[in-house]
Length: 109
Length: 113
Image (cartoon, rainbow over all chains, first blue to last red):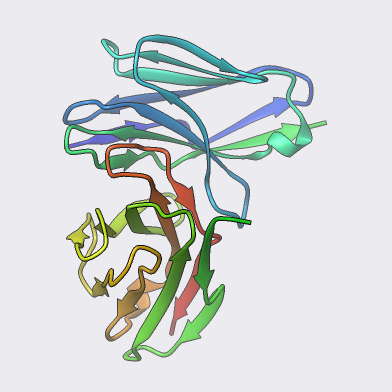
């Protein structure tokens, strides 16, 4: 079966750095996506990786290793507004998005 | 502002009743999706549409139906609601089915009693 694993919850301090990991086992691979979802709101697209390596976008970076079935989202200079759930998703060989359950990130002052 | 509009935002429904969740997008996206989101679970695909006039079943289609009469609208119908359909429902769209960059509506919180 297809599976996406990510930690249920993480806690970090304002101003610090946090890394949210995602491992996947899917039927094929056509890209990995990270979304941010604030409580009570819709998910919004953050980043996309299809080749191995690091993609940087401001304070957020996303890394992919296809051979290891592994990705992480790195958030730098954490702000209170970064408190949210972060969803990892993989586009499989049938172009269906497989979603992880999400990681709830709690930022403390 | 361009985007996706869902209605209603929230609804309490008696079991056995029929309910339609509305979804409209103005981005001229070809693909549209309906997901449900439950605590502790990832987003689960109910139905999708590649383009106007076509629909397909997702991971959890039972008890739901959709139609895609035109590009903009993609309503989701619960023919006879059951308590297990209590959930938050998200409509989403994308330029095509071969991208994972989806745009989501604000969600419809449905409670079936």
